[in-house]
Image (cartoon, rainbow, N blue to C red; front, side):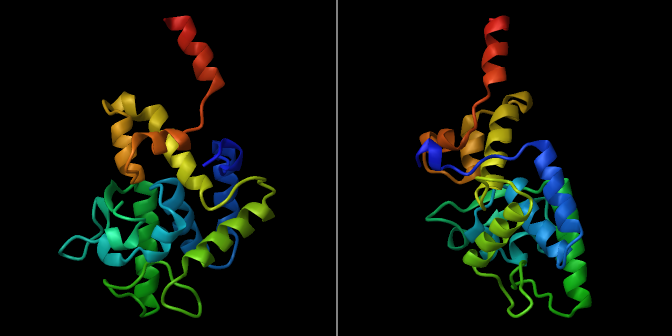
Length: 198
């Protein structure tokens, strides 16, 4: 993946702008969930489309603390176990309640549905992100922007909780650390700061 072709990462203000934009639109809950699956779990468009409720539920049917992404829902054999961010877990809970009310919830069903189908295609997810970012004037952003933002943020903060880039590699579902490193947005400010404290 050439540097110039990578999707741009999102800063805090841009993330807030997307969330506010989605909150005021049709299918707000579903779309907010899609966005959080990207930005807070680092999922690819394909993974978001293939995610089923059973992957986020415990044996007793309650929401799990982790998202258990199977290999068949991922790229290659990059299935993995991702702890659920509290905001994402809250949205999933709300979406499940909505689907229960609409009588379309099934533990084996897909989490992301469309108005016409019981699942969304990966291309539909890509198109949604493209439309959202275009409407907001976020140039160079795509369905991969949330994933890159998740990986970059995780890489910047992982040492504060005693982890390493290997943990980020696992969360990203990459087979090699070099692939993970290509996703990380580097910080000029951090490079300047580290020199001053060496």
